[in-house]
Amino acid sequence: MYRISGRQVTETTMPTTMKDIKDLAKKLEKFDSELLELAKQSDRVIEVSRDGVITHWQAATILSQAVHHAIEHRCQAVTALEFKGYKAPDLDDYDVWGYELSTK
Image 1 (cartoon, helix red, strand yellow):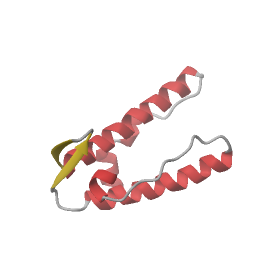
Image 2 (spheres, one colour):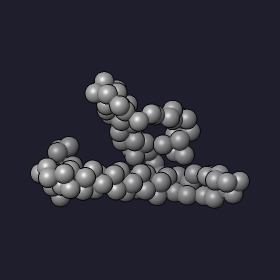
Image 3 (tube, one colour):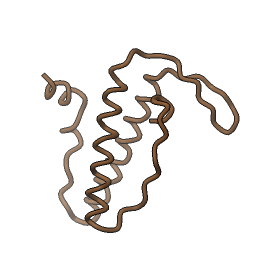
Image 4 (tube, helix red, strand yellow):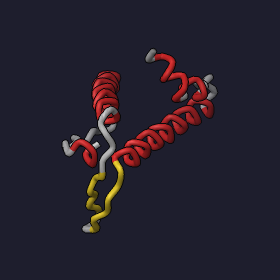
């Protein structure tokens, strides 16, 4: 999020209690809201400095990567649930088309 918003994101620690998980869920909900607001902005070129090398990326590309990265984590969670014998949610129920329909 820092690359697009310019706002430094604080590090989070691994949750070890239910309270920690609830606190983390609140932080993630806030991040989701911020990403949705950033997605409404016009596309623009972002200068990115990584390991002393400057590159330029479209904001839309960075947002797309954020979405892709989140999907990877959801898949990891589903795999872990299924491995433990739980019925995992069907990720096909959470596609962009369904989201679009839910916002109308």
